[in-house]
Length: 144
Image (cartoon, rainbow, N blue to C red; front, side):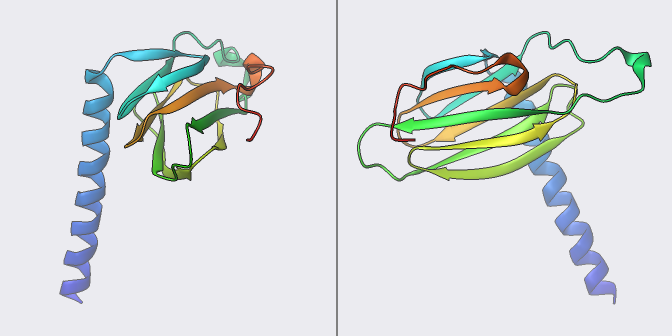
């Protein structure tokens, strides 16, 4: 019984330290705005909403929307791309999500300002937007 409790505490501690490290890394790197379209990413990039205008605080309603990330790779690469989503108030983290090759992900978020971190080993082209911003219209790579 005591060992199970110790294992649980260690798992929670490791998870907390991973979230703390991600949060520290997010604040140290320069961010690109959301929306951003067709951005070349080498290794890692951070995207953040600058001034999302959510519902008024007294309205009692939370806006639900999606953040969309589209990954495009040159050539046949299937190297994994890791994506994290986080609220800018650092209260919530979603992920990691792993995408392979040309792919996209849509994650439901609330009315707070959010960001996303994209980590990759190969160069990729990344577009990030929320569904309340419309999107890029035509994505550059038709093979998605």
